[in-house]
Length: 257
Image (cartoon, rainbow, N blue to C red; front, side, top):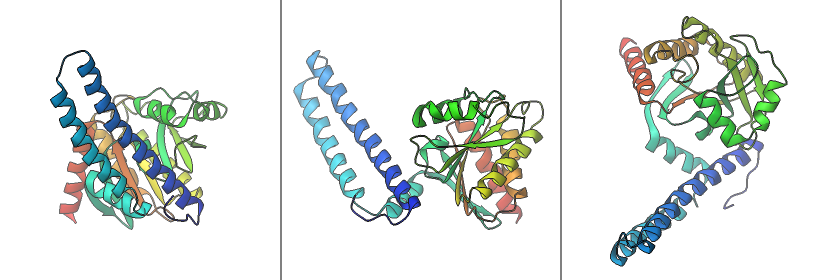
């Protein structure tokens, strides 16, 4: 660690930055490993291996240098590179990224779940994969979870303070239920004193709600919420159609103001 963390939140930032550095380093190393394997199998020549190795070495040196900076600086750089749209709703900053909610730094991460506490949707499964099976075990101990209600669990190994789970049953036939469920999640995040919240776009997985309906429900819920502790919400989803629908709606909202 190149700086001294002075709070629990600073320690989580450092853990998140360490996780990102490890993931990016692993991707570079895996690329080189694939080329070495191709060379062993005589699919490419030595020149190609040397070329790739040189390119990876440069990228690796840049990565090492970049990650010697303070976590806040690193996080700002990541946001600048990855944010697809940045705006504000009331006093809350809003950013949109094509990413899993568990792959952005936040105090609370919102996740859909089933009434029995199982985490089977794409978003929830990714959170369980990253944070560990103990998240689902803790959640299932709180079951049954009423549709639209919010329940918090620990984050496992994800560098957040809490995972907030909402039962999104029935949202495909009534997107208004998603808006209500998101409001419950944001209210719980306030009680947990979260400053930043990572929120999925909800159009994939839980109920297969159309992207435009999901965007309207998510943005509508954020607008309706009265923020106290929350200063930033990162809407993160891996579905491109979902991201485009959210950005389009936010652009329209900004134009109307």
